[in-house]
Length: 435
Image 1 (tube, rainbow, N blue to C red):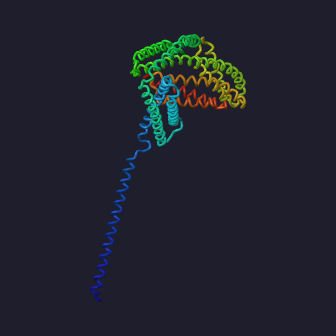
Image 2: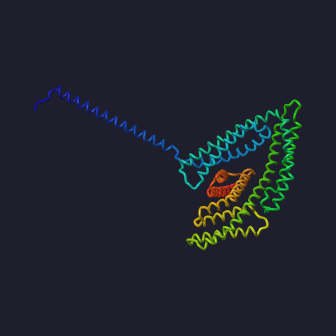
Image 3: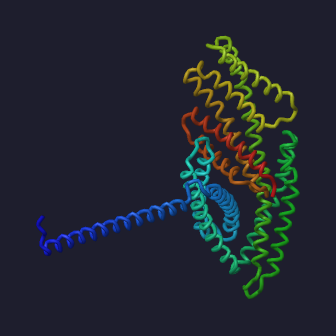
C-alpha cells in the first residue's frame, strides 16, 4: 500500500481536531442553554408559587371591608347630626358645601352596601370576584370617610373662632324655648299611644318625656355657662359650652321627634291593618270558592293553608283589647301574600292588579316601620355589624323601588322584599347585641 504524503496526513489531523473542537463547543453551548432554561423555569415557578392565589387572604380582606362599612356608616350618621348643629349655628348658606359633601359620601356608601349585598346574596361569586368587591368596598368607604372628615374639620375650625358666640347663645335660647313648649304636647301623644296600643310597643318611648326634659336642662345649663364666659372684648373661650348645649338640645329634639314619628307609624299601621282585615275577609270568600274548584290537590292544599292562617290571625287580633298594629300588619300581610300566591293561577290580570294595589298600601307601611325600627337600633348605642347595616341598606333600596314603581304588582314585590330585608336586619342587629 502506498504511503500518503505527510502533508496530507497533517491536513486530515487538523481537520479532525477542528471537528472535535466544534463538537465539544456545541455540546458545551447546549449544556449551558439547558442549564439556564432549567434555572429560569425553576425561578419563575418559585415566583409563581410566591404569588397569592385569588382565595388566599380573602377572609381578611372581607373582614376589612366589613369593618370599613361599619365605620363609614357610623361616621355618616354622626355627620348628619353635625350638619344639624352646623345649620343651626351658621345657617343653610354657610353649610351648603357640608350638605353636598354628605350627599356625595352617602352615594359612595350606598355603592359599597350594594357590593356587600352582592357578596351576601344567594348567587355564589368566585374568590377573585369576591376579593374585587371587597377591595372596592374598602376604597368606597375610605373615600366617603375622607369626604366626611374634611368637612367636619372645616366646621370644627369655624366653631373654634368663637367670633359668633353671642349670636350662637341667642339662637340656643330661642330653640330651647321652642323645644320646651313641645314637651306637654308630646306627653299627650305618648299617653294616647299607651292607652290605644299594646303598652309593650311604647316601652322604648315611655321615658321620652323624662329624657327630653333632662337633655333640655343640660342644654340650658351649658348655654348659661357659655353666656357667662362671653367677654366684653368679644374674644371668647366658650366653644365647649356651646357645643355641649347644641348636642344636648339635639338629643332633646330627637327624643321628642321619636315620639311623634312613632305615633305616625303606629297610627298609619293601625289604619292599614283595619283596611287589610276588611280586604282579607273578602279574599276569604273568593278563596273558599276557588278551594272547591282547585285544578289539583297541591293548589287546593295551599289555598286551605292560607285560609287557615288568615282566619287564625284575624281571630287573634279580634281577641285582644290592645293591638300591636305593626306586627299584626306584618303577620296578616304575609298570610295574604301566601293566599295571593295560591290563587295566582285562578285570577286574571285585572284581579291581580287590584289585589296588588290594595296590599301595597299596608306593605309599604310595614316596610317603612321596619326600616325605622332598625335605624333606631343603630343609633341607640348598640354594636350593629356590617351584615345588619347591609340588609338595612338593601331594605331601603327596595323600599325606594317600591315607592317609585308604577306597576302595583312589581311595587308590591319590592315592598315585600324591603320588609324581608328589614326584618333580617333587625334580627342581625339584635344578635350583634349592645356595646
